[in-house]
Image 1 (cartoon, one colour):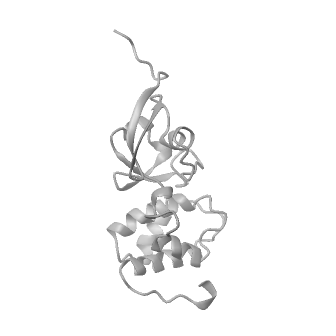
Image 2: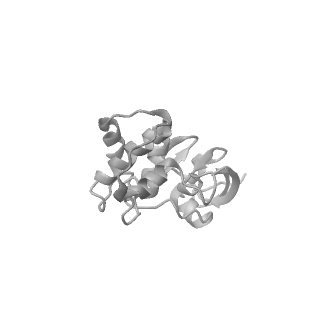
Image 3: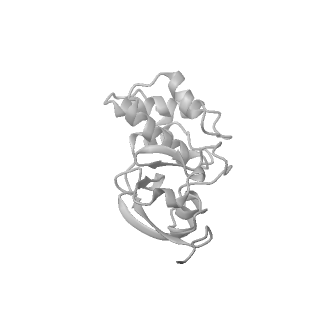
Amino acid sequence: MRRVTSDEPVTVSFELNGRPVRGRATARTLLTDFLRKELGATGTHVGCEHGVCGACTVRIDGVAERGCLTLAVQVDGRRVDTVEGLADRRDALTALQRAFRRHHALQCGYCTPGILMSFADFLSRTPDPDDAALREVLGGHICRCTGYAGLMKALKEAAAEMRGEVPETPEATR
């Protein structure tokens, strides 16, 4: 009988943004590293590598999770969604992405994929959040550029649009 060590690669297969993928990973390979290096899905960013900054947030089976705290082998047979799969088509943007663009909530963009993934999950379950709930989720992300005001405006507007309301958008941000 052959002994398998944590350094011996195994095959990992799962659904990434709606399509089946497969690659090789050791037992210690982080999901973020697997996505970026093995699969070329570089939209998921790596910031702190301790689950604090939120830049690595992906959805696993529809739930926002930290990719830097998840091992690639843990997603075998599951569904993983990254920012690359957020919109239905490559040239289309979601309400959340459009609101981020309108309110300049992107800035440098490093934290943006993780924030988008967290709020895509949150707003799908909480269609009419109050400011405290938005701040609670946003508190799981570190953004050094925006000052958070634009993010809050974008999140409120996106939630309204996702509920079918026509948000009032100031002319300056259109």
